[in-house]
Amino acid sequence: MHKADLHIHSCLSPCGSLYNSPDEIVQHAHSAGLDIIALTDHNSALNCPAFLEHCSDRGILGICGMEITTLEEIHLLAYFPDLETAMDFSQYIADLLMKIPNRPEKMGDQVAVNKENEILENYPWYLGAAAQRGISDLVTDLHALGALAIPAHIGRRNFSLLSQLGMIPDLPFDAMEARTSEIAQNYKDWLFLTGSDSHYLETIGNRYTVLGESGETDGDGFALLRNAIKKRRVQPVYSPA
Ligand SMILES: [Zn+2]
Ligand SMILES: [Zn+2]
Image (cartoon, rainbow, N blue to C red; front, side, top):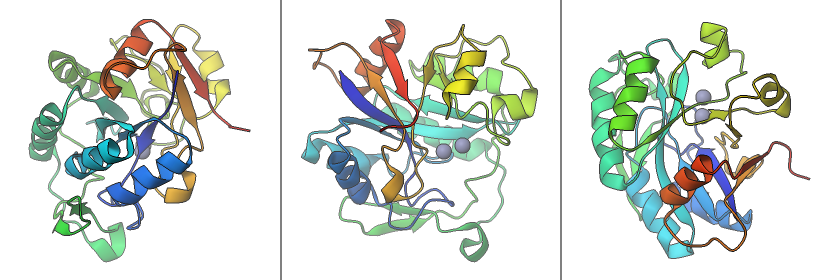
């Protein structure tokens, strides 16, 4: 079994703390006893290369992800089978994003870093903007690449499936993400995961999901996640003791 936090933001997300370097995220995840973590910055995977290197140094299974803002302004979590697929999709989303110049003093810094924490760039376009592509097409795009598509925090008051559409549309999502068990109880047909949605180091692992079966240790993080979903061996822990 694996303790997984599948929703973490780094200093690349405008709303993420500048202290959330890939290095620090992995250190805090290790201290929190997590053994699978996913980096899910808003609309970009530019910090995934450094993130994966730190994960492998610490013996944590890292998953390249992204939290895409769809045309409907729904947050959609995407998980990719490998770094190359994530980076290609990151460029695809960059081309689809509304080009609003980022103003760090108002919207927050968007810092891409290398493994040594050196700044590679302060990303010029606001990453909180919406991609000009609807959720249905994005799910199709992601599945064509073997990636997973999971709507984020579906009961939240904004940027969620329920806030934007008022219902769960009939689309082939791989699972749902929620922050509380109450939401999950209302939609029993769906498989639910949870994650910390951490924008600060202190909250990493505040919510997590137990994946897989006991004794199962093989495979990379993405394969473990995909198989756990397929076998429905997924246990969200909304409020750890
Ligand atoms: Zn979100
Ligand atoms: Zn998020």
